[in-house]
View 1: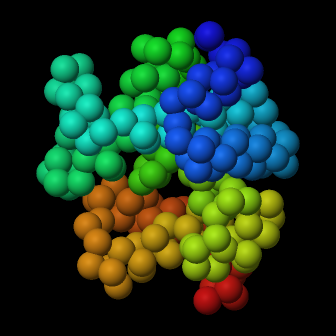
View 2 (view 1 turned 90 degrees about the horizontal axis):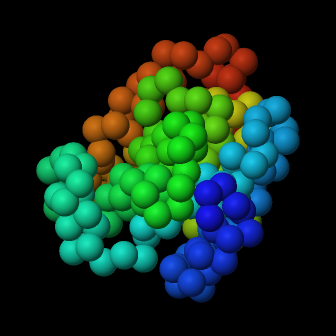
Length: 202
C-alpha cells in the first residue's frame, strides 16, 4: 500500500465513516490545489490529506491504548480530551499500517490540528486545507480565509490560528499550548504585507 494513493483512498473509505471520508477527500483535493499554487509536492499533499484523519474514527480508548503501547507522549489536555490524540495516533498509523516513510508527510499529519513553530510548506498546506476544504461550513471568516490561502499562505495560517484561539477562549474550551506557541511564533515571523492582509480582514 506504500504511497499508493488509490489503495490508501480505498482503505480510508473502509476505515472512516461517510462524513469523515467526504471531509478527507476534500482535504486531499484542497491540499493538492494549494501544492500546485505554491510549487509543493502534489502527491505528498494528497497522501497527507488522505491520511490526516486516519485515526479519527477510533474510540478514545483505542487511541489511548495505542499511545500507551507505543510510548507516544500524552499531555494532560490530551488525556482529558483523548479525541485530540487523533493526529499523534494518525502519524503513527501512517508509518506502521500505511507504509509512509517521508518525514514531511508524517509531520504534516502529526501537526495538522495544532500547528507548530517553523512548519514546512506541506505542514502549512495540510493545516490550512483541513480548515478550508469545500465541506466546511461553520468556521468564522471562512470565505475570506479560503481566498487568502491562495494569496498568502502565512496570512491564512495566522488567521486560522487567531480564529481558533478566539473560538476556544470564547467557548471555554481547553487550548493546547502548542496552538498558542504556533500563533505567537507566526505573529513574530509575519512580514508587513501579510500583517496588512490579516488586519484588513478584521
